[in-house]
Amino acid sequence: MPLFKRREGCSIRERYEFRDVLGTGAFSKVFLAECKQEPGHMVAVKCIDKKALKGKEDSLENEIKVLRKLRHPNIVQLYDTYEEKQYVYLVMELVTGGELFDRIVAKGSYTEKDASHLIRQVLHAVSFMHGNGVVHRDLKPENLLYYNQDEDSKIMVSDFGLSKTEDSGVMATACGTPGYVAPEVLQQKPYGKAVDVWSIGVIAYILLCGYPPFYDESDANLFAQIIKGEYEFDAPYWDQISDSGKLLNIHGEISGNTAYTTDIHGSVVTHLKKSLARRNWRKVASAARRLSTIYLETKKRNSNYIFDLSPLNSIQFFEM
Image 1 (cartoon, rainbow, N blue to C red):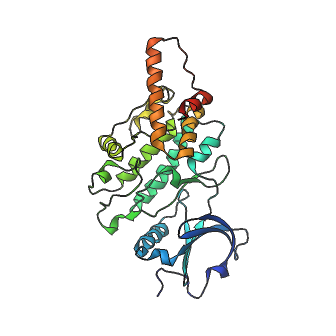
Image 2: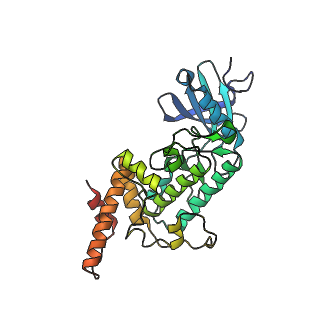
Image 3: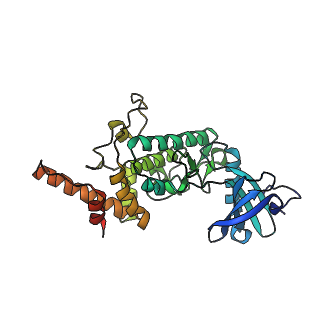
């Protein structure tokens, strides 16, 4: 008895020529494949071991159901599904541009206006999701991918494994990623679409300074900060960001052209490099806050002192 809707009388290898392995997980592999009926049309095929699905069939079925509802230029598409005796295959749109933060680090320059353009694309995608009754529930930088390697490549929202549709009942399950999760989720209250908007706010904050708004070595303290909404715009990193950028919310009197074009690549990338190397936002944020404190104290003592924010000096400071 098949678990999922599939094409009858047709195996996936009749339609697709499997090429290289793009990635490997504990219970799945992702292959590069070419559509035999459309030569040159490349796709990503996720091959999932059915043994690993025992007890999780509903979760995958939900993800497939969600992806079939969503057709948007900034959302990674599901083209088709196949099921065989041992594996389930998801034929996905091929996205080759890499993760959001990796690309920012590699860029030669980066401005608040660039960040604004990125977030606008994410908002369009999430607005479409919400309009179709879908809540992502795990928006984070790792799930934002560039479509291709072009300089002006669009951003794609991916990974709908934790997503839910509003018609599936009241959402109250604690899920998501620490640091991006909304207060109502931590408080175990019923929640809805607003949890995605909160996560986008956290991502926007990081895009503007390179470190997260909430941090602590202790999860309990981190969650307490999130519930209280305690965050700062630390000098000097936020000195070059516009007032509208610091609002991080919808404001009817702010136009869409207020983002600054000052190059903030150096300071943002200094923090991002550390986070990408360690995948530990807390240490990066803590170091940034300590550096901000030193900056403010030095500024008070000597108003003529020039604080060097060059990447070299910042990297040396963050070596710990």
